[in-house]
Image 1: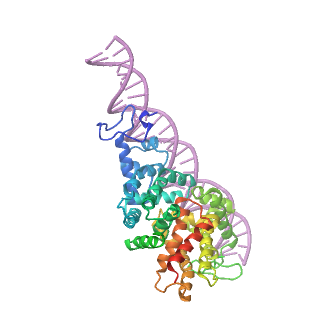
Image 2: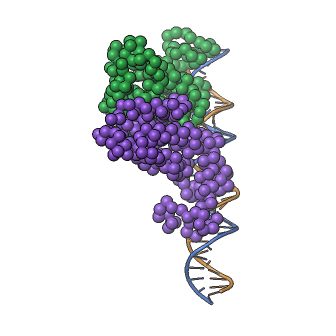
Length: 208
Length: 208
DNA sequence: TAGACAAGACGCAACGTTGCGTCTACTCTA
DNA sequence: TAGAGTAGACGCAACGTTGCGTCTTGTCTA
């Protein structure tokens, strides 16, 4: 068993470890696989994504993939990585309207434009076919994202900009639900005007 | 059941509606397949759903399936049939609040409880992996459903209960988006209180 | 301290399994 | 008799596993 796997932290760049290390897996191979998945998902789509294709693209043996990832979905979950936190951590402007406007626009753009958004959409699709995957997606990624989504509201409450008894859960659903709905179900675009509208109406009804 | 006369005409038990074939296909086999898909999807889930399994369960030869359905997804699209129209056609109470309350609750229950809802969730998952399927799902089912979703609002506008310049599209997204979001993404339950809340807040901000 | 050794990651290649979609052979029925 | 039905073999593709040989690197010992 690899003893450096005690946490998710992997040694990178620091040491010049290109390939096999007695106790560690090859960071190079790992990066190659995750990059390949990322690229291929956008290029060929999830339906045409195969482990063999990933291996070929990554220049890695299929067995190397199976050594470290139990399944294709695990690669995707891994590849999603910290992208959610990176793209979707709400900034703080000290003003609810600005915070929400920026965050909702970021969510919309992330979902519709970014590679990581494509990854999340694909994983959501898998989750709809497999409750175990759904559970993993939620615990490994979405739960923390939901906390981030709450953040601007929580801050506004503590600033007194929103009533203390506001149901943050419902509020998040009302703000983000329509965006996800468009992206995942209707396939309509999510222009800035749409998210602005959501923010404006939300504020009109909740702001003191 | 399905007797919508698209390009997909089949002989009904009584009538002699033939499109190209002199002799009609077996309605019994067709029903058996659609029922089998419906049952199996709930029993084993989409991930474990196979054509061979469907054929066995239906007591039908695999070839019979391939003769009439190009792919597994086509069976699902077919099996969804008119379930949307049947479950999700908004009733008319002459009062917007009642109409919306009933409709949103119906949508929530359909999505989370019914077999047809499981079918729609599964198809949504497939759609997230294949844009061609997404397009078909939308044109063959969702477009008409969206019209139905608009209906209560349209009626309220003509009654003068809502302003004429209301953007029906956004309104539908705001009302249904949070429900779909919960069902498809977060997996949270969608209790009556949740939908009532959506209706109440929607009315508070739009009613004259 | 050099060289042998051990541990294990890696690539290559072949394998058995599964499900798909096609095909043949035959039966049934209007 | 044509067309729809059943039964099931077939080839294909991808999956996931396995054996084998190579390479790298830490450790042990002469």
